[in-house]
Amino acid sequence: MTPLLMPHQEDVLNRTQGFNRVAYYLDMGLGKTFVGAEKMYLLNNAVNLVICQKSKIDDWIEHFKKYYPDYHILNLTKKSQAITFRNKADTLGMYEQKDIIGIVNYETAFRRSWLLKLKDFTLMLDESSLIQNEKAQRSKFILKMQPESVILLSGTPTSGKYERLWSQVALLGWDIDKQGFWNSYVDTKWVEDGDHYREVIVGYKRVEHLKKKLAQFGAVFMKTEEVLNLPEQIEQNIMLNMTKDYRHFNRTGYLMMKDGTELVGDNQLTKTMYKRQLCGQYHAEKLDAFKDLVQSTEDRLIVFYNFTAELSKLWKIAVDLERPVSIINGSTKDLNSYELHDNSITFIQYQAGAMGGNFQKANKIIYFTLPLGKGSCDLWEQSKKRIHRIGQDKPCFYYYLLVKNSIEIDNLESLRLGKDLTDELFTEH
Image 1 (cartoon, rainbow, N blue to C red):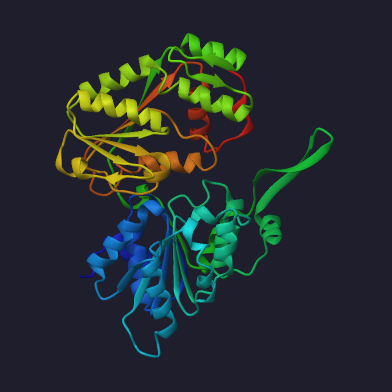
Image 2: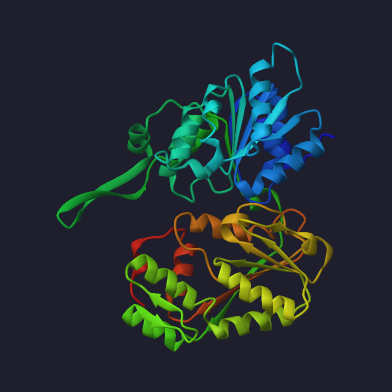
């Protein structure tokens, strides 16, 4: 059953009809899954490999089984299925077996060294921004592969930082080395840093030329507002008081909690982590504010969180209020309550669910705590799109529970500026 594509999806495929290497940089909610899968079908290679986030493996399997049942779908994280895929990939063409699709996550892919021997296959990278660091092990592995055709999918390929595009450009077949790419499109200068000098990016040049060049290599950029009239997005900050515990820990880097838990911020990393926790799981007023929000509506709610201890306390509040609960994290994906109950609460850990999933049955997201660290801006931006996408017909509300004058204020400002973790987020508060 071939899926019925929307006009903008058909347009993307028509614009790249003659390309066997493409990049579909479609905003969240525009249906990259449908476009990418249809392009793979049209490319018509016998062997196909999809590399995605671990949390998306089941979604891809379900999509291909539903819309492309002629394919033999194999989960390469399972040893027996990986062996089957490897054997079939070796014999396809000789025995004219059915076409195959192997699906694997980024962290597992580079541990399947035999994937480097594949040839004449289609490679699809879901969230291709995950290979933007060409020095990372997974990026090095993927850049060594020998696909005949390539499909890159991402809603945030660069987060506005064009220097991050080089590894994806290489996969599209643009024969330009990294230094040449930077010289052509990235403005830098050398600044004094103690006894040394370091090169910093100060801007970009020839951006329109870069976009035209990318189009020549099969890249399509498309924003939601260009093709869809989605509902209004409304953000609301709920400000909470800083606790004495936070002030004490921020000043001394040490705190003995009432329950005997000892917080020792012996370096900036641990100090930052504990300050975040003192604004989250240890903040009684914030937990009360969360409870008040839940009690204020019987609508479906999506809640983003960071730490397991946060989830434990939030879960208890939801259960005490007799609300059905669903969860997505590194170990669990249970959406039964979300699907079945219009007053459910779905808890999503950023790394496991911010970059994928359709939750447009809900129109309200609560951010109990915010993401922080490398890639946090992408996680935050994409988390908002979980409800603001095709099929949503209500205004989307985003509630931020924020502790005044704390690390959370700088964190949110940094995210809104499109920044990942930087040294300024480690300054004292």
